[in-house]
Length: 192
Image (cartoon, rainbow, N blue to C red; front, top):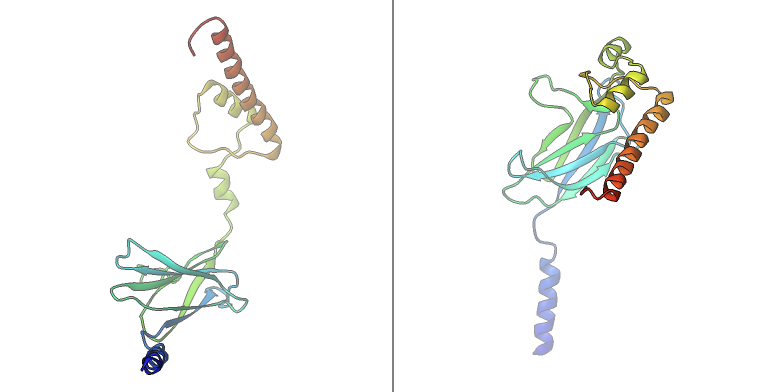
């Protein structure tokens, strides 16, 4: 009787072990929108959410040389799913409707989904516009403004490599002065 019960339990486990929800398979391809070539090394993230404001990442993969990443997951009831792609030096492409980006796509929890996500190369900055946004300011003016705490510019001035030692020396001198001044105040009995 005991062997019969054990055999029945083993048979039940084997019979019912394959049951359950089927996994959802998502095959994603990330493409350069300008050249229509696949992008390798793009980060593709699979999100689960019940509200678009609260995305929870459940898996992340890097695309292969063919620009693909494959996800396999069990869809949970009450949640929706979304895939999102990003890559260094690339930006999302605005959809034709002007309301969404083509680097994201909602996934319908079916057996198999295929998604093509688009990214475009970030254009280099225009040197003329960049020069007006970050004009060059002589380093002695910058050091004077930092030393007297009179920053008058509404922008971060353009700096060159040769300016760094002078700025470093200004910062080190200010810190040394503060430490020396505090030590002197302690010596003469003032509370710091």
